Amino acid sequence: MKASRSFRVIRAVVLTGLTIFAVVPLYTMIVASVTDSTQIQLGFQWLPSGVSLAPYVQMWQTIDLLHYLINSTLVALITTVLSVLLGLLAGYAITRHRFTGKRTVLYSVMITQTFPGILFLLPLFILYVSIDRAIGLSLIGSYLGLIITYLSFSLPFCIWLLIGYLASVPVDTEEAAMTDGCGRLEAFFRITLRMAAPGVLAVGVFTFISAWSEVLFASVLTNEATRTLPIGFQLFKNGHGVVEWNQLMAASLTISVPVVIVFLWLQRYFVRGLSAGSEK
Amino acid sequence: MAPAVVAIIFVQIVPMIAAVAMSFLKLNQFTIGNWTHAPFAGLDNYAVVLGSWNVISQALLRSFFVTVGYTIVVVVASCLLGMLAAVFLADKMRGRRVLGSIFMLAFALPAFCAAILWTFMFQPDGAVNVILGKDLGLIPPDTFWFAGEKAFWAMCVNTLWRTWPFAFLMILPAVQGIPTELVEAARVDGASRWREFRSITLPGVGRIVLLVALIISFWTFNDFTTPFIMFSTAAPEWADVLSLVIYRISFVNLNFGLGSALSLLMVLFLIGFSILYIRLLRVDIGGLEA
Image 1 (cartoon, chains in turn cyan, yellow):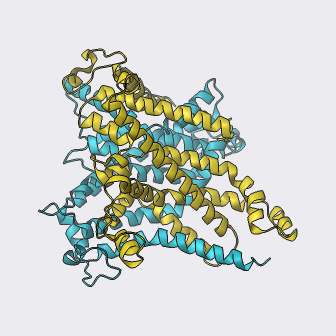
Image 2: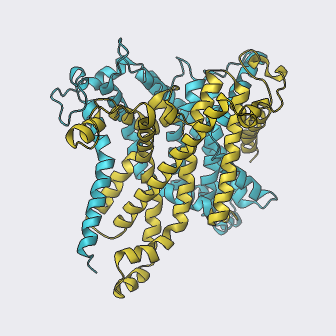
Image 3: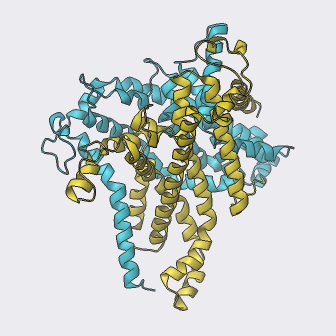
């Protein structure tokens, strides 16, 4: 059936408006990233006269971008591997075994995700200070300290979503494999994990992204050696304290492009996981 | 299972217990090094907020209202825009997939990059003032967005830009999941699109919209990234949200006891709100019968 004329007009207006709202900031970002340093100080221009790729070169020198990139990647990668592994273990136990208090465990895992990060940051910070005083292990400013703190939000997130994916693998398939002579572990790796693989990949990627761009914990727990991207980006200022916006936009774009591509590729698994996680 | 339990205990349960303990201590720069010997403060930290009417409790109350206002604006606007986009993109039409992906770009961008981008756009000679001010004449072209009430709206727009695509992403499958027979029957009966939306679409997506609203309200209420990137720790009153205030009390004024007490009050409020919300609106967060 053909949509009425007025409906089509309203639809066109709304979708155009939303597209403008979505795209103009991105356009601003791209244009600014290829504007040369004198033009960028003149403010926003739809088509800047001085186009140059220099910001993409200078950004590596203005701040220690490569160093921060490596730090962020390292911390996010280890956080992801740890929380997906632990999340799989916990998720498997929760979906495959009956035990009392299961509901409580599930609810508490879900509830903690709604807590503000600062609630965990304060006690962990104080605990790190005491650990440092007591045994001389300095966690503040170390990769380890940051990774442990990141687990406080990434682990419940992984458990919650992985439960959904693991529950979608029928127990029968697994048991069939086990009667065919597979051990429990072998059945898990060959059947369950393989069937849940896209979901596990999606959870991993989202954990990676959230750790990679985390601001609150990193602003307190990193130092010059372990500084991650979001904190390092605050240093994009020239000698007069003026922000080098073209370089900042170039750097933001550079680090965002891979993230955005992977996200768009995996988003459908993410939606499925969020709804599965709440249903199962 | 065992390693996961140990990890959960260390990163979740121990910190939470410690947070409760800290909130009863006089924990500041002098006592932080040896916090097990920090003087017991009883309910003093809570009394600062709840006990008497003073400068600090006034400031905190204002910050609370700013945070709540910020949350309401972002949640309502996100759900509205997300629903509009979902309803208009549910039908088959040319370019539907492309538009859907374009909408998702902002949500896919790392949050701190989005915050930096909007900070740039809200600069005095930035894109917002040039486009809305100079080009379209809708606002004074010399609007300053980092003080007063304007800062609040700047922060809201910034966050809204990132969160409404999430609402869209979650609502779209629900709109598409509405049985086509139902829609076709309504159209054969000559129902208007508006009527169709009210009687079929809205009841069909209501459940998921309520859930999305809850998720976005947690994100926004707890949001630290956006205000911190836009204003650093010195946000104007209108944008001084709770997480920023607690951060400043803890890491600038080094009053960790008060910081813990405040973050616990924040959690209590969130829990109370969620229970009310779920009970009153009968939100289905899933049976959790795994």
